[in-house]
Image 1: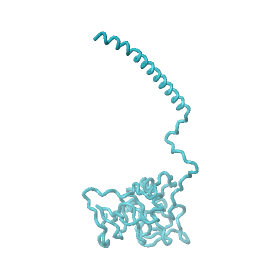
Image 2: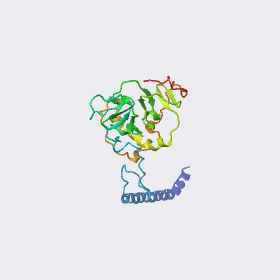
Image 3: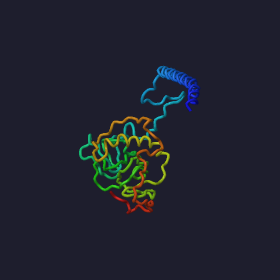
Image 4: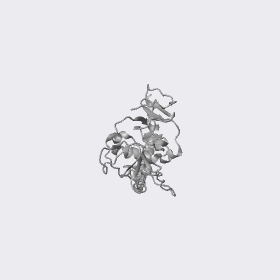
Length: 266
């Protein structure tokens, strides 16, 4: 047995020595490759941190969202001076004495313009308040809504773009409103007018309105305003204003066949 082991060991010595040589060569090649890659990386310019990706050739800045009519610039004054309001509305307490809410029905005049044009609809020369009255000191009965919905023409027309829960002075007027829990949801269609101005108003209601007007803490002063950056706007999406999933245990009710006498008051 020992006689066979000695020749076998002598035969394996050259193979072992050759293997060590190949291992040394491979290690040297690996170290050289690492050095080359390190030198190449040192010559590269690092990308800017937190910066936007570079624009492709010919790519232009996206256009800002369209501005809704009658919300920026000076308010409309009737010939001879003054401003026409239709129905109850908040009061600009910086220039008018008394409380923060005017409950006068129908068309009437004031010397001051609306405190924030984004909360009013201008129709036939008069301003209709389409915001949440409870955010401006009103403590009377209201109707509870959730999310954006259209507004009947007699209340100003157009759309309420408010996000999440809010109230209005008028009851739901269409069978496309469905009562879920204690809130009325709009389950009808959204027209091109809504989608055109949803980016503008969704930014306004997410970023500005909560800091100035919610919870009945309005100072009666219009907020400073700047156009929203296009990076913050996502047209044709609900974003935070999206209808929330219905809570477990709350049944999905069918749209109301008749609204008269059945409106839910808060």
